[in-house]
Length: 533
Image 1 (tube, rainbow, N blue to C red):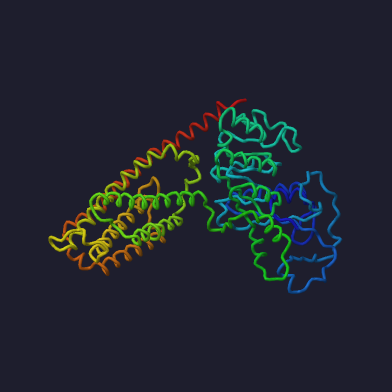
Image 2: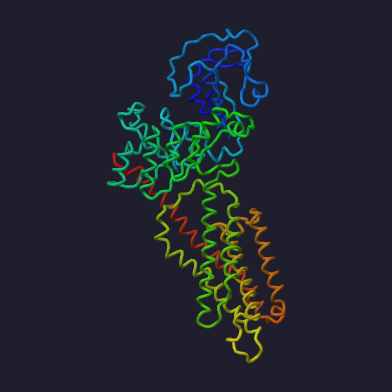
């Protein structure tokens, strides 16, 4: 039995099960099945094709308790010789080792997350898409649904002209407009002598496991982190998974069900899928398929943690010249290691955006040239919270001392502890308000609607309750004695800080939009006009 690509199964099937009998599979029926598969795929359904070998004699040696768990067994309503011997057709056979006489039964399966990924046992590849050798370019509608731009009909062939599955007529002008290198070695020479356009192309065709592995190494040699995603039912994907930096093996639904059986034996397909997926360190669940969304959320979470560390360092530096150290060690560890990192983790629950797959991503080395700009952004966003934290801590510390008492007598005292707790609560509130603006890199928080991230909202409420609870439990006498201008400055500065954060995001958004337009113009222009013939 084989489960996977519909096209691969149709190539080796000669008979079809029509509900009550086996009949030869005609060209008209095959074309009708192709239309059904196309319409089903366009409606965001997943299609799995099953091929079975007819069993002429009943199977009596199987235990009754194992039949329902590991095998599907259907008896014909009349003698088995009703299935006519049909010679194999002239259609080219797939490379699969299945016998040519089989029955075909495509079955559409509902997949709620199929619009986020493309599951096919014949597709494999890195952060680009690699069609199978038999079909250099699949349906463009599927590629556009994956967010891949094919307006220039841009495609790179990984095969050599002398390979058995190479297409000699595929290099005509009517087939492909961009004259790009062919073969892995030609791609290496092009990258060394001409430009880096092959690293930007989204489609690769006429691929085989060795050429795919070679292309993965090319990406790795140029500083890319390669993620390979493929079917665990394809044994050739094991080599590709080993070459990639990160591998994601996708199992069909029925294979997952077979792995959950408690029987004493393991079905062959489930065992083969497990062996192929051994190089894969990541298990992809159905509800977590938006890799771009997770990468964007991880970027914003890192920015929040880096901002926390930077603000704490700035506050400590400011207080060295005039005041006592603002916080003790355990308060610093609470802010830097526990409180704000927990808030950053909730960024993983940010909602998915429809235009995520249509945006150009930055190269791995682009952050080096943007480092001065991000440092300026950090100073603009956190200079005011830093100055306010130092001033508020100084006011709180002055209220804890008797009149005329020197400040050098407050080391490791209750007075300094109360002032540190108040200062820590202030900076935690400032950072929580900053985290509200960091949920999205460019959109204002009122457009992004942070209330959709329920985990973030719940954790922010918990953190505010914890900090204010500790402050009132430890420093209630000090809070009561604080002057009115302390509260006025503390609460009045919050809207001003949010406005500054949003203004800096507006500047960053201009740079981001300029980068998107420049990247698209540069890619289309160089690919359509300047690539060598």
